[in-house]
Image 1: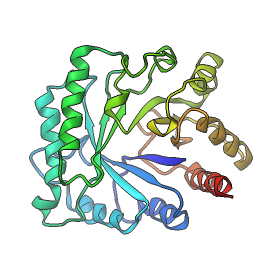
Image 2: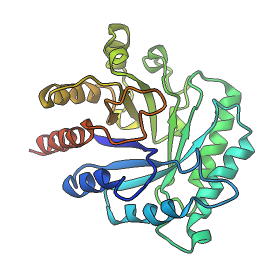
Image 3: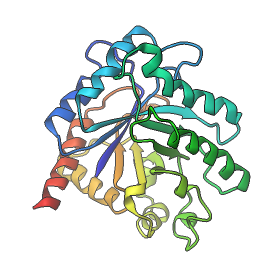
Length: 263
């Protein structure tokens, strides 16, 4: 399993240290980190100096991949604005004269979940901009619709009725822990036939779990997806603006599972 981390934390001195510590201590764990300095890349300017100082430090860790955040407003944002934001990220190394100010791909947030021909063409154009972007090391594309219906996930025609063939990973469930446990959600999410390496699950509002129970939760998430992020932050709009106490245990659990698989 791997960690998909929405890093929407302002990088004041020491603010990203939990990530650095986790990446150093758990070299078998891959982190894909979403950077979001201005609800996007700061169109018309560079991120402030705090970001300019901190983002290059991520390059010191070979198990950290970086993605730039771009919202599509469920394909309602003008596609030219989306392409312009992707291009801003692509130009960061040149504009800053710093090759370490580089992202490896793009995280398209607020993507549609229900298939429409026009939306497919829209998202394909955005994906192609990433795939063709020579400064994106991995040319990695992620979508976050927040929720993909279990009817779509379990359909025999899932790749014709979704946008999964445009992405490297898709967040199929971003919700509260309690909603994850709901039988009508939990069972269908674990019965799909899609490659788990293409899917991610993000759970927030976790209760106070013991390490043993947390290990079990991660095992259950793995039945749906190979990418995850968990937080016990419960305040709306603050889920991804701090490292919660569960972060270190989550990474340790993922690392432990990886080592068990290799044994």
